[in-house]
Length: 286
Figure (cartoon, rainbow, N blue to C red):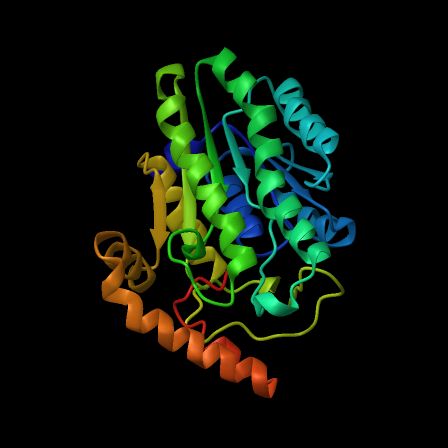
């Protein structure tokens, strides 16, 4: 059973103050794990930890900026030292990014790469030596359907998420002989704050696309995939089918991607945010 897979295990989850990270952390606690919830948003993290206080003794929190290598190193090593092992690391913190390449600044490029890719690299760098010494452990990196299918107007985001998928898949094969597992979660649209969080600047109110699944459902699917030892955990079914089609024959989805490009170009031209979100239906907007 999935619940038994995580019972008594030590888990670290980044980006844990909202969205998928929060849902994964809460589900792990419900299944009997000891969980260190890490996030940059100190106020929201405090509220989250208080809301999970019924798991007294098994829920812990740490304010961490995953773009700072020393902070991630201290988080991972500290969790292993305090709790005796590091069984699961969920590198989940990240930011979205849908925009025309012509308006993307180098500052935005640096920020999204620092957060979405370097944040994962720092976590992997810290966790691998610990897990190899233990002879066990499981690293779970959050990518996106946009790390499997090249969506137009998401070049910044796809760059980082394709990197996370490639890193995860390479390590999955490299570390298997050491007893260390690696999975990468590739969700389609999931209800979260990511749709209102720009690469740079303050968050704004924004409704997620209509086809977004609840974060709790995403967490259930991720943990089921982890327990089953899946390498690439792509969901829900419609986005998963799109990935399969693209993997088998990229030409078969050429028309679909051209239509997404057309819709997004029109949405940006008119400034219609809702039209832009409609163009992300099942298109890896997480």
